[in-house]
Amino acid sequence: MSYVCPFCSTASAGDATSCPGCGAPVDITRKPSASGWIELPRAADMARIQCGRSSLQIEGTLVPVADFTLAEGDSVYFAHHELLWKESRVHLERMGLRGAWKRMLAGLPVHMLTATGPGRIAFSRDAPGELLAIPLQHGAAVEVREHVFMLATSSVTYDYFSPPIWYRTREGDETETHFPLGYLMDRFTATGGPGMLMVHAHGNAFVRNLAPGESVLIKAAALLYKDVSVGMNLHFEYAQRKGFVSWLTSAWNLQRYLWLRLTGPGRVAMQSAYGHHHDPERAVIDSTPATERYW
Amino acid sequence: MTGAMDAYSRIVCQWCGNQSANPAQCGFCGAPLDVKNMVTESGWREAPRLRDMTQIQFDQSTCQVEGEVVPVVEIALAPGNEVYFEHHVMLWKQDAVPVRLMPTQGPKRSFFNLPHLITAATGPGRIAFSRDASGEIVVLPLHPGMELDVREHAFLLASSRITYSYVRIKGLANILHGGNGMWLDRFVTTDAPGLLVLHGYGNVFERTLAAGESIQVEPGAMLFKDASVTLETEKIKLSSGLLGGTSMYLAKLTGPGRIGIQSMYHHHAGGE
Image (tube, rainbow over all chains, first blue to last red; front, side, top):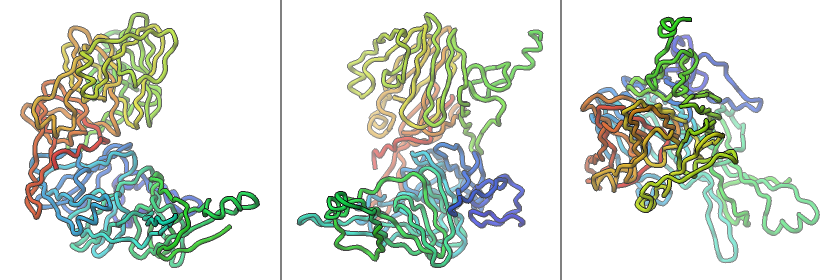
């Protein structure tokens, strides 16, 4: 085991063209930006990833497909709309989830499907981007932003929680609560042994390791996943205003920038294409713990 | 070089099956011939990603594929050559290229959200097409005597030697839960070859099913199939739980014949 993948830390002989844990090419140079983000290498077309007795192949580069060969008795779970094709012999079963009402309110699927081998089954999401395989060692956990998850092996336990990221605004008698990170967040833990989680990134994906106490500001919708040890809170930033513009805009908190502050230690990943969170820029009357800065 | 030596140096394109003398690209569908043939372990062949500015000859005209994210197909029409298309895929054209309408039993089509009319452009001149989504251009040279069914709104253009019609997908389950709409475009060649160009959303894969072999596909992912391949919607019962009895629908394609799928599709949420 002479090769350790810089992206998922899986040890391998390094004699294959791609990492058996996450599919990242082994023969490329690591590409950290000057600011410290590492661009996750796109899995090569037809990259093969071993997952216990089962395996998967990443196919295509624009809207990639995860093509699983499930061994007898092995299973994966997924949201039903990710399914692209399957062999008839692959058995599908409904997987109930707690809190169906809450999940429905959050726009999340109220149930998932489990596919059990033997047989082949493939998944894709209808958006250009990258597929990221995240190997999880026994006991390891990651927290994933909602609507990013694609599938996980059955040894990985799924749970969700309400992230402490919200703020409340008021205009007249109307009060509105905003959830820039979404109403719920997914948590995956490898409780039944090592497993694998797969997420879909819109656009390109970047990862970085934060040192203890080190923090970075990102757009909330750009977050892909983070280690459980990484803390997060809201950050409000107000642009400098002078003269007439200042007088005109001060009453309505205009030119406010909303950030998600992530604080180490731990690994964080983000995507380059994300939906815009509409901030009405009304006065904030309440929020989860937040920092702010006026320029 | 003699004709006999030419025949030995020809390369068979893995995508369209034609033989080309050019080692770099297939002269019929533009597929690069000097790259690895990408077949997955499960048997799907990845559509060859056409190189930017790839040129393909058909009749006396040429077709050039430009761009890679949302590719454009530009046709240099020779005098008298004609292509037809849905009018909203036209990107630009030269002033002098005349266009005409082709009859298609319009009212029935527009009732089912298909374009009421098909437009045809005649050379000489240049005209270009694109669909407003990221994906791949799939060039399908049709040999004489072929019949190909294409999901609605996937066809970009076809040369006039190809006969265009459409067929209704039969069966109530297909209509209600099939996700392919009610119609498939059917392209038929009789005694002359023709060129059919499709736009696949995301990446495109194809495979050939043996007689009786079948595969279940997300209905929105089906892109094209030989007319010999049957399409039916299959209800997949999900095991019972508290809300037992739920089910999902997949398109079951049964051979013999070639089928193509796309990796980006609008999920059809019917039947759950």
